[in-house]
Image 1 (cartoon, rainbow, N blue to C red):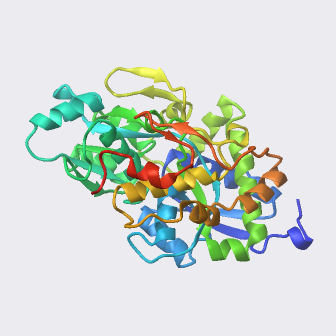
Image 2 (image 1 turned 180 degrees about the vertical axis):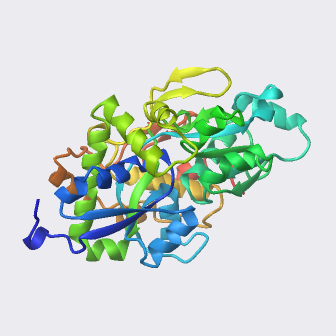
Length: 383
């Protein structure tokens, strides 16, 4: 397909960074499946070793766009932990599919869930070490939320460190960390290798939560309007293809195994990609809220309420000192205008509202109304 005239992408070759996580599948398949060529661009996926490297390459222009932790995008927008830079979320890449893994040492002490962990920490001397993948990112926030929902203060009762996803299992195997929150396949690999066990999936914390975003800088989005539209359309088509059949999911898992993951096999990737879990202690189940890439387009819309939630948690944990203008910041970052054009080109329906309502594991309702009160209501937070 040749696209010409005003719809022609400003940049025909788009370099997009990603980390080795199962939820990079739609980005990778957009390139491998040549959905990108249909929309007049060529996506070059660039495997990066850490979120910090991915961030730095994006901000210096070495990458055009990235598969990013949602919270990381808002951290950059707010200037948390580094220079502030205006950002753009072009679309949500997936819901669900992350997990909290605990060391087998905990299971040997009778700890298999959050309630038992809370009781155990009251008796155990010292603080356990838990790892997340980036301080402002989703995994840090899922870990904090899960611990706090069980009465464990993540700022005072545990030590938290930052570890790139591919290093999680080896750090746990050598005893350097006692638990971690990360994306797949690292939780599944820990269970397979009997290093750790899946204590909770992220969808038990927030069913159908936003996870990764397709992000770029705001200046890039503004100067590459048609390229951004084409990028969104390409990944939407790949997302729809992945969810069209289980066979397509198996094919995607095989490509991920061949191109990205050395320690995983296609079957391991495919099982959790399809929502089939084995926690490593003998419990098996099919999850009601598995890793989801499309959901008839419901997954991919950049909801304003999704962006706002991450800022409420940044405030809760003291990453930002003052309340931002939650709605205004989200309205700037969530590029609904570009998404709408990309969805139209891919034939994907739009939701009726830019807000959605969710109930999290502690019973709290989040719908984007009164974010200041929501951020302040938690009994466990940074003073």
